[in-house]
Image (cartoon, rainbow, N blue to C red; front, side, top):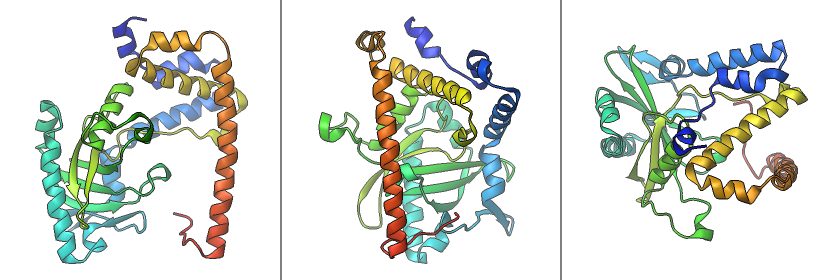
Length: 293
């Protein structure tokens, strides 16, 4: 494929159904449509309705410990004010990382509240803030997630990154690999209360994201899902690397397929072992856990 053809390649839900959906039954196709509609509804307005309340005419985050806690509740007043000032300063610098058109759009919003958010399993140990911003009125919200970015796991093996800011590296990677990136992707740096300089990247808290429920998939549908994931992975590599060299290296054999299957099975076993160890640690009192959140 030509360079522009690779660059513009994308797979939306309708294209996915026409290209891979021949093996899906009516029930599965209905579930896909429902999942698509649900994902499209997950935007700032939906998050605003679920995560905020109105206090004296002003929008404020709802306290949902331990998952999300407003800054004013998280820290004593003096420290909360210090963090708020730092986030305001970081927000100003973040604007400079945006293209001109996105910067103009962002400048039409005002920061009105801040909350601390618990990150997902893949980001354990990093810090995350959520910014509540209001535009024309309360019917025009924007929720930004400010997530700590750390050095790449590859750096110990391939050397330091060319990016001075780990957030900039994360944003550059997403823009390069994703067919449609969040329009508010950007980055900056902030000094923590402990005096540590931390890199962050910005994006919308919710921007039409969805996920597949593999627990209810039949074997045929699972095969289709694997094809979609493989296509997406291949497209990302084709945009970011030398696709001709990659194709020549892989050839027509099934060596890579078998290697991925072997790795997946081994990692699934390791995941079960890790979870068993976590459960034992909770039972022994070595780890405090809150269940059902």
